[in-house]
Length: 202
Ligand SMILES: Nc1nc2c(ncn2[C@@H]2O[C@H](COP(=O)(O)OP(=O)(O)OP(=O)(O)O)[C@@H](O)[C@H]2O)c(=O)[nH]1
Ligand SMILES: [Mg+2]
Image (cartoon, rainbow, N blue to C red; front, side, top):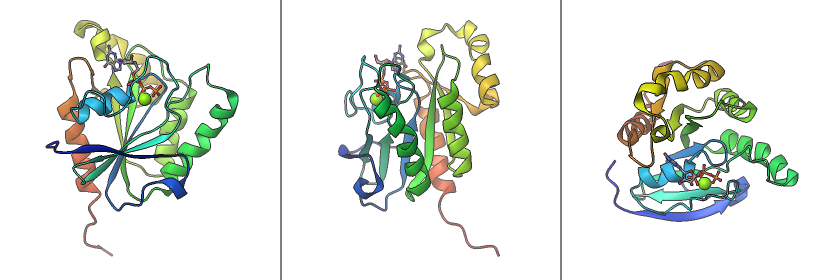
């Protein structure tokens, strides 16, 4: 993907406020602090199109960004941060489900896992919803720079076990080294191509 222009479009919590657009859309999901916003910035080669934070749980809205007026990129609110008020936590599930279920533009979700953490209930819940709503999923293990190469295979075992996904389903990524960026773009582009309507076969 050649990056020409990027811009923030808007934030929303409910469908009435999603941007009116027929552009294909790719969303980024994962627990709070996993590195969604950092990954998005690396994908579009901008230092801070998307606000990153050392205070987890700051992004509680669905944030829409435009890329080249060709594609919308969506930073989904993180989950699982203990200090978020209960009222906000309760909104998260319905907000995400409604988005996954109703957003017709959605072509794929990039789902992030932290290389140092065992996936938790919300991560598995998220994978279940993606399957339920038939959203193509691109699983990514991020913060790869935190673990030396020779320890990685061992380190990601709990992620493979918890998700039931094979090792080659995951792309290893680091926002620091930018390792994995090109592979994620390839997989996103494949998902966009796959979603192009084919001739009806029936
Ligand atoms: N070492 C390292 N740090 C990272 C990486 N990705 C993100 N971080 C750091 O992790 C912290 C959280 O990153 P964000 O991108 O804000 O995470 P987020 O998933 O958007 O978090 P919320 O918006 O709170 O849900 C920041 O301090 C980042 O600098 C990475 O690949 N390697
Ligand atoms: Mg964020």
